[in-house]
Amino acid sequence: MTTLTESVGRKTLTYLDYVGGLSSQLWAAFRALGASLPIVGNRYRWRASVDQMLQIGVSALPMVGLMAMCSGFILAMQGASELRRFGAVHYVIDLVAVGFTREMGPLLTAIAVSGRSGSAFAAEIGTMSVTEEIDALRVMAFEPVEFVLAPKYLAALIMVPCLTIASNVCGILAGGIFMFFSTHLSLGLYLHYVLTSIQLRDVISGLIKSLAFATIIVHVGCLEGFRVHGGPDAVGRSTTTAVVKSTFLVIVADVIFTAIFYFTGKH
Amino acid sequence: MAIISIRDLVVEYDGRRVLDGLNLEIEAGETMVLLGGSGSGKSTLLRQILGLERARSGTVFVKGIDITRCSQVELRWVRRSIGVAFQSGALFNSLSVKDNVALALREHTALAPSIIDLMVWMNLAAVGLAEFGHLHPQELSGGMKKRAAVARAIALDPEILVFDEPSAGLDPIVAAELDELILLLKKAFQMTVIVVTHELSSAFRIADRIGMLYKGTFLAVGTKDEIKNSQNPRIRQFLDRVPDKMGKPSEVAASFEKYLRGEETNL
Image 1 (cartoon, rainbow over the protein chains, first blue to last red):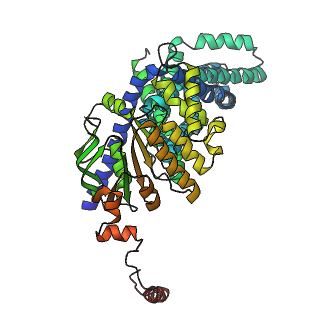
Image 2: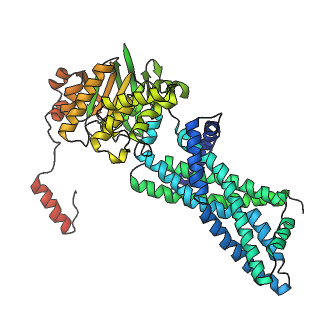
Image 3: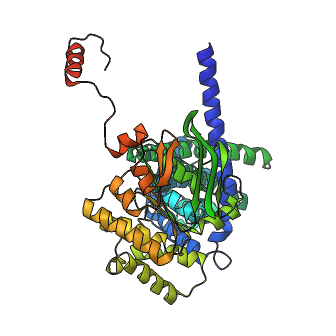
């Protein structure tokens, strides 16, 4: 019994420690974010932010676009196979358009960025911890959160919503291609129906989600990196943990945001 | 006047006492060598002097500021007057050697880029790496990395220069070259130098005073001659390179045979 209590207590403390670390890192990052801004901030941090934008956003664009197109096709085909039975194939347009802008676009992008960049953040910072580079930054009077994390965070806050928009466009386009080949609906008419089916609220809710997902991916990845102790094997473990935790937390956050938007929306 | 003053310093890791009530005064302009075997606490003491870890109790005054209790702003101010050459070099792998040395100058001073370039060249020339500034750290040998780390450490003309195991992993000739470099830098820049090492020849070559650490306490702090002539059994054991009591070969062989027979052994 004592062992069970001890075990539960220890686990609870570990989780609380993790949440505390994440919260204090988030607060420090908000305070340091200004230094990464152009003109008003530090030009070296802004340059680092632009590098990160290229890595997080531009490099990921083909992968995210392809994933979104595949998912768009899948969603359209699965939807059409059921809706055809009721003679309601045209509802595929609403399904794909609303489904992507509200849900699939932000989620797919977050999963892709988590796998690509979240793991890279953990590996990069973890290696810096192991090779004493983080300590070197501190003794050189630099703040590691400002120097390493803030440019990544700013880049993710800009690029993840951009990738989400690209993902939405690709997914909806895939739906249009499917509709063209299955029902001979022209792409122009398809886009007209898309624009009438989605509302600005759908797009904004998707973008709000993408900002939250970007925050989760960057902070989980960086925290895992900062907490690396030991050798190269610890870096490998932190990389895996970063992807698993950030993907899990992204899905949990998605549920919470979806519930908030559902219950605050007009029915 | 003491530039660093450590009083009753206690450091614990998970309840295990690593430094046990240390007291040490380091005078401005002297070379203090912290000598001791593996696990004696010398690197931990160094991390305390750099403000990289929290102590359980005690004070560490650097330039009159207690860095165990000071604000982040004060700590950054203190750190700007300390240059550190880490054991592994801790050079930033994403930057060239030149950029590693220029980093603190670019960010902490308002010097013109042409002046910074000149200062970087001078610092690299001082350590014999003037022609290697364009290389990245991974392209350097072990000795060159350590010299590049020294060039970075002296970039801001610090009052205190710290070396963590400067001779570790180097052949005797390169290690001797590094000792001479430390002496040269001290003479040229009139810095206070703190060196953590377990290399006796290096310690006696460069030290003004030596602090001999054993299991988290100072066995002795004194001049080279005082340490050399000490009759403390632990110091004599260290200086005369006498191993701790080990099992006799016959006892080890007997235990091994028992182990192979599946009997309990004291291995």
